[in-house]
Amino acid sequence: MKRIIFLALITIGLSALVNAQTKYHAAYTKVAIAGTSTFHDWDMISEKATCDISFNFDGVNITGLSSLLFTVQAESLKSDHKGLDKNAYKALNSEKYPEISFNSSYANVRPNGPNSYVISAKGKMNISGIVKEVWLAATCTVNPQDMSIQSTGSLKIKMTEYSVEPPTFMFGAMKTGDDITVKYNVNLKK
View 1 (tube, rainbow, N blue to C red):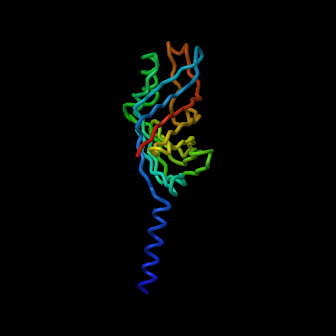
View 2 (view 1 turned 90 degrees about the vertical axis):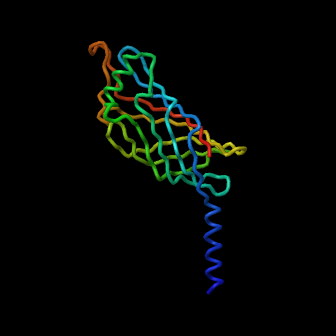
View 3 (view 1 turned 180 degrees about the vertical axis):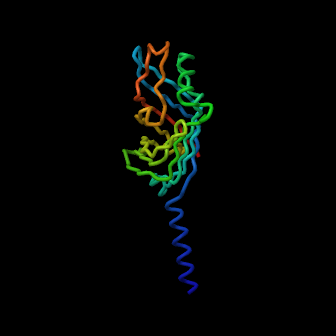
């Protein structure tokens, strides 16, 4: 009986080593939101997002993701025009909902070449207090020297799906389009 218990403990221990969970946090982030308007295309950028991820590894290969929390303060997003920023914050209702976030505990991982993976995470996107389940995809490249991870991706959404009325400017003469693209670039470290 002692031998069976001992073997079971060794098996559990080896399994934990083979599928080790490693916590990462963002050392650098850049979020860019791009859209259109009746006059010109526009974008807003933030380099102040936070990201915490727990990856599962089988040695040096990413095999899964057990948690992901990505958060950006709405008012950290800036454009080249203060008027655009002000109207965007109003449309996002940033006083009541200051954060935009994505939270996930499940992902598909597919190898994409040496030290590279395509990770599709299913989770909850929260914008302006409206929560929708979405798939967020990223290409993740592992640096084998320090095991840091570079992650890039994008997501297309409609503002109105999150009850965000596309902002207007100059008393309605300029209107933004409903479709936006969110691009993200994150450098993750242990």
